[in-house]
Image 1 (tube, rainbow, N blue to C red):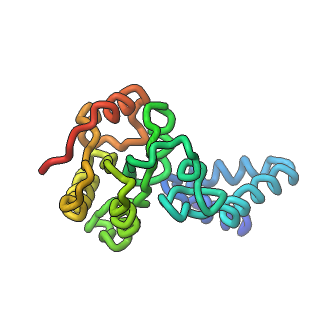
Image 2 (image 1 turned 60 degrees about the vertical axis):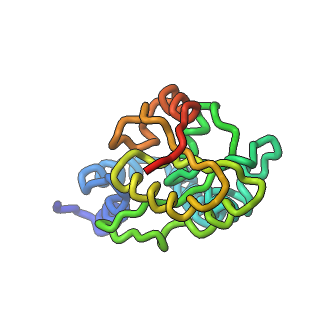
Length: 201
């Protein structure tokens, strides 16, 4: 791709480093930004910088938060006896959108995937084990996407938690195999949560 400006080329390189953004799409985005007013570009840049500088992971569940403890973990009205284990923040958002779950979450920030070099030690698993040891926790829901990697992670977590006294459950298979949780419609996801089953192997 012959780009006539080194500054435009640098912008295209940065935008195309984002997942799912190819060079042509990045070029369209860069040209769109170039046509905007300077104030708009400053606001755009500031939003990205503030996102990076002012957000962190919740010290309890690993969810993205503007404070040390996220708004879900700090909500006294949430059911603290249930922990729903998810892959990332997009799954938290998808489940919250169903308005059918009132427990807490635990964000793993990925799933076990040997093909991608992601081992259990790369995920937020140890803190889940510690949370499950709490006398307050009665149930852990495995709400990972029904993919090979999700099932592998579920099995690993089951082996780690099976000797505890807490109930281990998983989403009902109304969620189609191979589907990522974030793309499931709210009605189906809510129904799968409500009719969750005890996890067995």
